[in-house]
Image (cartoon, rainbow over all chains, first blue to last red; front, side, top):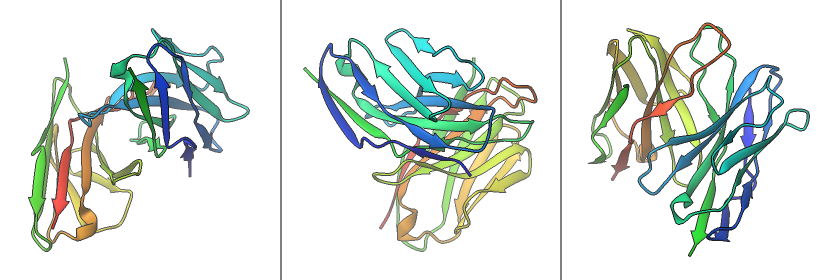
Length: 117
Length: 116
């Protein structure tokens, strides 16, 4: 079974600062996917960024980037130039490579990120 | 484009009453469908998933059940609610893939269930 650990229950930074959210995972799988989801106060789950385990290059999406360390099983999210709208719960998630089945996501417990004006 | 609808948005039910939450997906065929529960202060827990009509897999044994009567309809039910069933329930879908590139999950807006 997979486990995902987010060791920071809550973080707070000033607007425009850069913040890094940590995530570690444990798995015996070699091929898998990692995701960061954002859950704003509206409670909707929004996909922020994804990383395929076979890719060495770190994924980036505008102000969001990841630092994927496969050997260390670490998958941190960096948010640059943080904005008030980035305030949300952030969940790290793991998904096995699917052979046609329906592998759901294994989520961490989340980090509550607060962007201060 | 694909959309997912989940209702009701909020529900307050007494202990022992039945439950029915509905989720429908539009714009795609034969999606994988999921029910997740998010308890206060905790991450998301996968409850059920389905790869097709009438095919339901349960991840966590409990007094909840799921059904998929139509290709794009997924229903979460209970005959008698418990206090511990309170939480935020999210429906999600993904495109099934037999290849390497899996699609991520796309979530509905959720249902906040309070059992009193």
